[in-house]
Image (cartoon, rainbow, N blue to C red; front, side, top):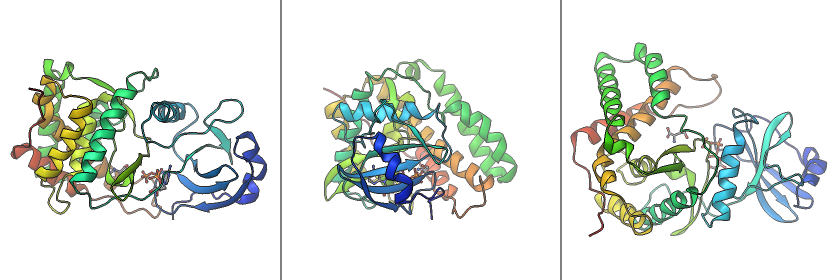
Length: 321
Ligand SMILES: Nc1ncnc2c1ncn2[C@@H]1O[C@H](COP(=O)(O)OP(=O)(O)OP(=O)(O)O)[C@@H](O)[C@H]1O
Ligand SMILES: N[C@@H](CCO)C(=O)O
């Protein structure tokens, strides 16, 4: 359903000439995805993904595309954007911004085992280190400034009990962000939405991270927390599965060792990561963008996760002896 802007082979026949890819012989709309119009295209140079951006504009997009290009150039498995003959990664198509990136092999692993979690943890740490030398800055646009703007928009729709939970967690996170521990956390470009449906695997082999359009600069540990909260849980209950958590954290730590401050920040950031997606899901549920055909994600899933991360101890981060 999610091709908002149709593209035909004829539309691409001369448009593609600006890229070093030869002629296009096939274009096929991709049905999953709710943000953008995506197509697999077959060119003389191979298979690629064409994205027409429906919400992000020409000013916002270079951060994401240049970050992907930078990471790909540093050996991180992500789709590599293709520049046109003027060196542009984002170009107009049907009046909207568009980009071509390399196609990742494989499919999403929706029932991950420890081996998949370890592969994700290792690549995530490589991504954070490689991002260190990326020169552009954009803040995480779904961080605490956004939480403060969004909470008043959802409060009128939710029960007293949920209002209390939401207000109390915001209060806790505000205090935590003012702490010396938080300020000492290492940070840089993060993916910020590294759910199972944004990673490709061929069997046990990770082939890439994609969908970088929530990326921004934030603490690296927040990125780890978002990832653990989706990859290492029992999906029905949100309870953490220790063996998958340990596999992911150990693999990450082997590439980029966690600091002492990060150990203290771990549980608060698992809570922050749960809050971020509870809030965005509440917002999408009560303030849908357009009626469209979209089924909003269930906010209660992250409400459950938030309550669990508040009330239960979590497997600690590994420490270097
Ligand atoms: N580089 C890529 N290589 C292979 N497949 C891709 C690539 N990019 C996107 N896809 C496929 O297209 C689908 C939709 O992409 P994506 O998840 O980025 O959609 P979206 O609408 O931009 O975002 P959202 O996940 O928020 O709905 C993915 O599930 C994946 O199957
Ligand atoms: N990963 C988000 C969707 C936006 O990418 C969620 O599950 O709420």
